[in-house]
Amino acid sequence: MKLIIGGCTQGKLDYVLQKYDMDASKIWDGEIPKNIGEQKEPMVINHLHNWIKSQIAQGGCPEKEIRTIVEHYPDCVIISDEVGNGIVPTETFEREYRERTGRILVELAKKAEEVERVICGIGQKIK
Amino acid sequence: MTLIIGGSGSGKSAYAEDYVVSLSEKKKKYYIATMQIYDDEGEKKMERHRMLRSGKGFFTIEQPVDIKKAVEKMENGEKTALLECVSNLTANEMFSEEVPVTEEVITEKIVGGIVSLNEQLSHLVIVSNNIFEDGKEYDETTMAYIRAMGRINQKLAELADEVVEVVVGIPLVVKSGRV
Image (cartoon, rainbow over all chains, first blue to last red; front, side, top):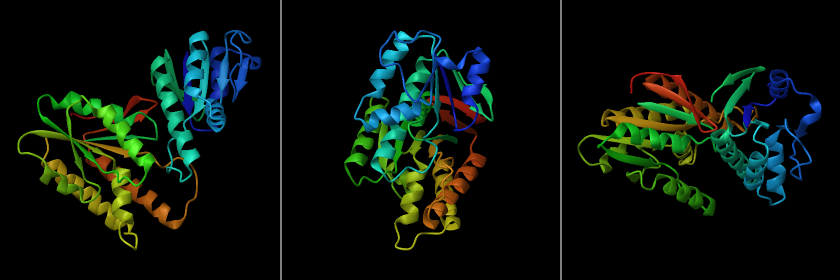
């Protein structure tokens, strides 16, 4: 699995598509395959942070689900915004979202064979 | 002195703890906690941090304000300390009075306090928060806090031997020096 992170609108998806020469039909945007097997590799999950947010809003457990996905798609590419670099929000939900997204990304980074941080469309390999 | 910076959930605390452990050898290790607990969420957060630290051999000192006084609670002899974190310390100092303290005054107090603390230690590791990249406009009080934090981080980075940014648990050295 490869993890791509960075601020919003930094060209992360374009960077991935170009680097891995993928076509756009394989992108899951703010969601993940509901049934393992409905999607074959290679697979890209874009805007993972949006999916995490929707899962938390529904009272789900994104930590567990993404673990399952990574087990079944060891060659997938996961793209997420970094959302923790701001003033800690006063709203409980927003605080929880940022904290849990951060921790999920730390866990994914540990498992990833490669982590890149994209800024201005340029990727820096940090692992 | 080492400055470690990262956002919420970036893994900066876990990294900072291991960092202190690795450079402390047989020296006494102190954990200087600055968070004031008001509610269940704060309680849980503190508990999580305590669990993270358990077994690593830290002695905890609560010091939500007047950071240089932390040294009065330490024993004599060689020691290292982990200060966590500058963002809580700054908020506590800034908003404990009825009228918020200005960013100039607060910067001097925090940086001065940390420098004086550092002089008493073999090594001080400071955790600070990256609160600067959400692109939002806040009320004037919060903006003053953000500016104060910006100044304090810059000053501490200048004084530090090493500055590390932690991103998704991965340390990125932004200033390297001899530690």
